[in-house]
Image (cartoon, rainbow, N blue to C red; front, side, top):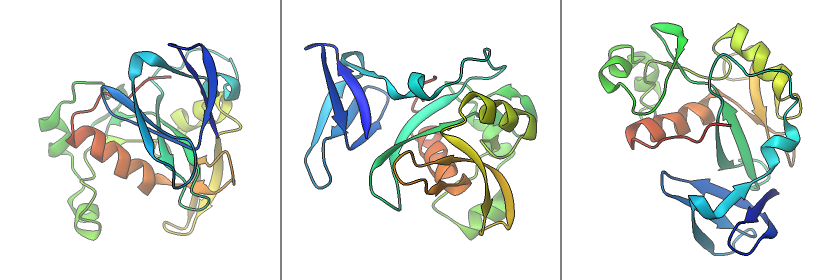
Length: 188
């Protein structure tokens, strides 16, 4: 479950699933229940600070968004960094440089899975040094796990409800949508 504060009422609430776009946060309070739309300014999501180990400020922005876990169906927070493929030390920030992202697009991967553009971006699991920082900062949320898809172990998000692995393809799909739709992803 995802805990948040409704700033208008001051009431603490628990959501089953939260998704967001640039202007609104959409909250579902139970599986199969209706979705409610809130202004971003009205909601204060608390879970991330409870999970974070305060070490230091990372040398890159940490982005967060929510998705429905494929395994248990509950809303789970996803965390990632985003850097340019052609310069892994340069963070991808909004507004996105579409020409640069398209020039480094991974066409072969896109042909294998046409619903994902595979822009020229690195995400969680692509940069060992950044992965190490993420693993230290979010030990309850990010773990090194083995991926059957690519037959290797890498840092990935874990569903906070059932522990299911939320691998790179789930992150790539979301990042692809955010870039394509020009959505500014919230930073932790």
